[in-house]
Length: 187
Image (cartoon, rainbow, N blue to C red; front, side, top):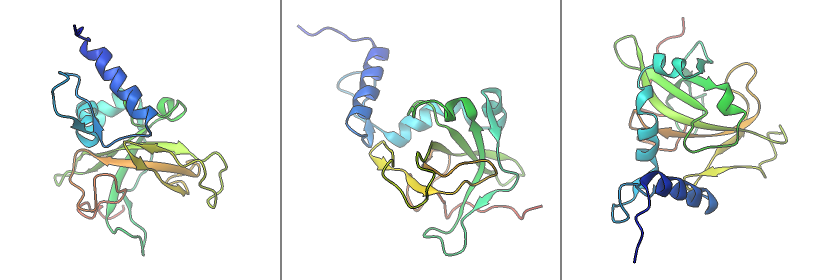
């Protein structure tokens, strides 16, 4: 006879299994064993839903790190923008956790404000050497980008993985720069 497992226990077991197998693009839904898998993007979208506006992120300890919107450099594989990064320093110093994005990336909303564009998972490079990538993490079945130099003063050489949860990225849900996002002129 089968025993009913509480949904929170099932979610914890699913996340543990996800991390143990090196990631997957699907996360089991805690609703019922017969429910179809939830995509990683939908899962991250659910856990970041309360951060649609920067004020909610700031209330939970996220701090805006860049004055100007981050755009792709000339010659980048994907032209476009990321947006404005809000970092949670407590999460940045903790082990990588799929339930707690290190950064939230906000994009212009077209009305002079900002809205959530992506969640970003961040891991400092152990070697702090741009030519060494033997510590590249993976999450949700995707390798992180990097190693790369910091995007703002004080950010170390690192790896990152973007998950576009608030805007569609035509280049892919896990690609850093989004060709559909443009930055306003700096100023």
